[in-house]
Length: 132
Image (cartoon, rainbow, N blue to C red; front, side, top):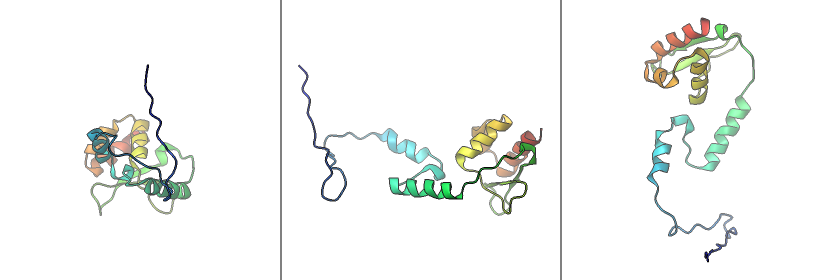
């Protein structure tokens, strides 16, 4: 017969849940995956993640733009940063890690390879893909 131990999962007085640290195990894979994430995907707490997602949602806009009309430029101030200039936009936007991958997929280029290139060279390749 199998034994089952039921733990009390009710919230404690501080509002959080009790955690029995003696029952778990150390899994190095979790921290290594966190460290290997790009900076815009690393969060120290769920509150920080929620604040970031909420901020992005408030700033986000939906717009359909012809891909050939998008300009990709490398910033002169930061050699590792790309800016996307949309027609009629007041200022350039910086792609997130995810949106850069989507843009690379749109032009048929491997995002992992483009991320290793200097920004000016990646911009030239992306711009060529967008216009052709």
